Amino acid sequence: MLVHESEFVQSNAVVVQGRAGVLLIDPGVTGSEIDCLANDLRELGQPVVAGFSTHPDWDHVLWHARLGEVPRYGTARCAAYMRDLLSDAGAKARIADHLLETEIAGQVPLDLLGLITGLPAETAQIPWDGPHIRIIEHQAHAPGHAALLIEERGVLIAGDMLSDVLIPMLDNSTNDPIEDYLTALRLLEEVADDVDVVVPGHGSVGGADQVRARINQDRAYVHALRDGRDPSDDARIGPSAKPGWEWVSDVHTGQLQSLAQRSERDGTPR
Image 1 (cartoon, rainbow, N blue to C red):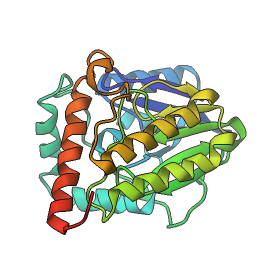
Image 2: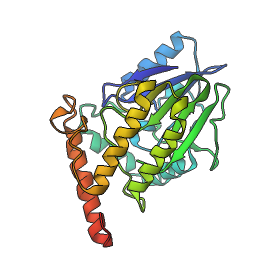
Image 3: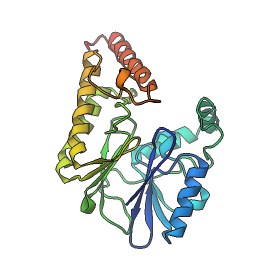
Image 4: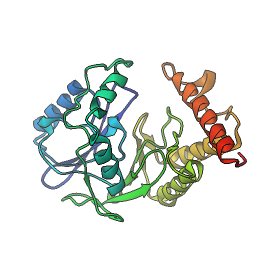
């Protein structure tokens, strides 16, 4: 297994070697980076035989023609979300406009964005000729989000969870985003003893000692959100945030405000 880290918010693409080629998970982010990834795989003599997107955020559903016309899988919910999004002819233009505010404006290949084949609901493993990869689907962060457990290698690919630089980001389109997130953390905790390496969608790869530590950190953050308070000891926000990542504190403030508005609208206690 190989990990390629993008310069854009430390986004991680994961390559898993199979018998006839590789499975490529969440490739990104700029065209030059994906092109570099394609070159590296060609030099290794490893064709891409399948892809997988852990969830339907734009930076996790990218592709490049040089990676080949192969099945690109996701959960049924992930694929349905992308179909709905792409049914709007202006969706890619809005993503491109959003990227104008970033340092990668004009560098992201959007032509093949989101062409995901949804696996049947309750599918337990990725269908490919390689190591068994368990799909752990949940509803935290984004519709149809999936973590992946490469069981025989003890690797957990966590998608946009368990990051050392990003706080948990809720999916506020659900009825209970707090409980959805806590449920997802419980699912990951159930397999934690089988994990030697955790790969977040953004941030640093962690060893076995980091798996439960990151689960506990994310749970503590979500509890703080639920209770309407600042998690002062979370190093990912506030003065202790990693240089260049101070904007994560703004995300935290926005989530507090969103939950307060939801509580006021629904007449429910925090």
